[in-house]
Length: 221
Ligand SMILES: N[C@@H](CCC(=O)N[C@@H](CS)C(=O)NCC(=O)O)C(=O)O
Image 1 (tube, rainbow, N blue to C red):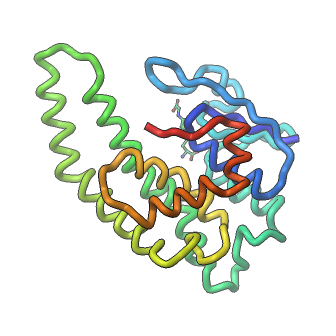
Image 2 (spheres, rainbow, N blue to C red; image 1 turned 90 degrees about the vertical axis):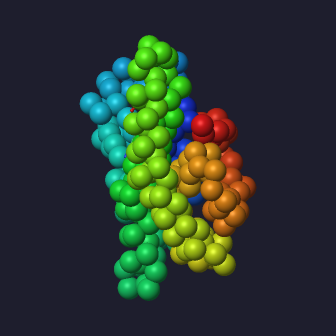
């Protein structure tokens, strides 16, 4: 049986969603984050030196990095499923794009915005606070906000008139994009109606709901 190591409120939800979509048997080990830093506990580092969530143990072989885990599960157990278009399908290049875009381009911006939010709310000497605020506000205004706006407007346009990213069928591209879009909705104040409707569809999916039963409800800050 596979073991999914999952930090609470983390990217591991999308792996549980994929495991459920594929109908695979797995045990979920859900771990709490450090209350102060929100980082992973040392016990996760004993499973894999990076100590990140998700980690997947398949018969003693531990995989890290959600994109690699998704590709592994699809290649190993999902070749016959509709979760990956065949390489000669016109949707295949888009499939590859979303699979890599999720962690390669979109997540770094969202992680940066979370880090800046933490800097703003972290206790610090009163004379340092205005300096820190000037730096975070400056980077937000000059880089982060315009970048997020551009990226999310692009995703929003791609979802217009579509149920899933590749059309009418859910695929592993949706699995990879679920977490960044859930994070985008909670970390930006942008008006994103297509993304919001898409995230509602994900969260209404029976396989997603089974995943939440195993890992707990995903409620991102
Ligand atoms: N690109 C990696 C990112 C993994 C990652 O940073 N996961 C977060 C949870 S969403 C984590 O483990 N955070 C706790 C920590 O860094 O200690 C992936 O997609 O698997």
